[in-house]
Length: 475
Image (cartoon, rainbow, N blue to C red; front, side, top):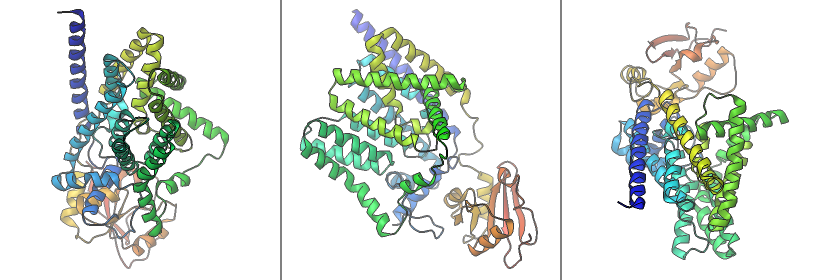
């Protein structure tokens, strides 16, 4: 056997072993997160069911929704109908999507890196703890990332009309999955324009923006809030420059810890790792401009900058928000480091892979008692309450999905107990479902003539109260 054939056999064997290990961990992680745990997973499943009945609203009498975007519920509509009411089976569809995201990472990495290095980039994505935590979650982030990677991999500066239409259709679909899709459309249009084909860039922009523009027009005609834009502007709370700086440092720490498997490390080390990741990725992009077609690198660079600026202005932080950037960072980091020192690039990749693997095993949650949240409570609601009973709960969407009862959330603004009870009666609430954490530190849920405890499930940690009609709220 020649050295070349031997090295390819070793590479194939190593890649197969890593793929099998990542697949096993993905399945384990997916099985440990019950449906409803993330809240948004139950929301997307419920909306997928509503879409089949011709409605995009919650079954509690609320007006039509403008967000979440309809792409993922639409994607789920047929699978959800096939597995109903065993919603937990959708987790395996999402695991397959996660594997598709890893494959798309490898395909894009092949545009920048030799075969072995591209496999390393894909392995770093597959074993990343951020993806591991969310690989079985019924949310659009992983599917969106897979689509965006496929579009970057298939990008051409001078595409044929057919390829241009396919690129626009994919970008438009991505923009209905996550609001990040707007950045994807803009970055691809800018890269096409940079190729001095302004007419094709304009055609792409018009075709890609058609679907999200139609959704925005629907919201406008129905006089709904402008979706994510409204929520994005409503949660800005950077009162002082120091708060924005602290947020930027927090993002660096999330990126550094998330990319390199450094959860639990000192804050300064996480921030330093984040700065290193940004610098290495920027250097990798510069190298990519010289080594690859500049259009693809331009699109990826513009896209990454827009997303980073978006997160700088958004107060939320979390490893989930790293997922769309995760493969791009690793591809660019390895592209840059490999050009300077292959030993350094290989050492960083190997160390990060080991640290992420260790992290994935340590953080793996215990096996849940059931595949959905609050199984005993939801069963009691189905058995003991009328089908038309109206609930108020921190679990409003899971209640609607698992029991079919209409439910509303608690109002976000603080209020006195008597005011809350009066408003709940006005909203037609019959039962209130809370957990033991909610009742701590408040007197809202003390029993009395207007509120009686009818169910307590210590295993679920939940309490159900019946709201009595026609009684005066005690103050």
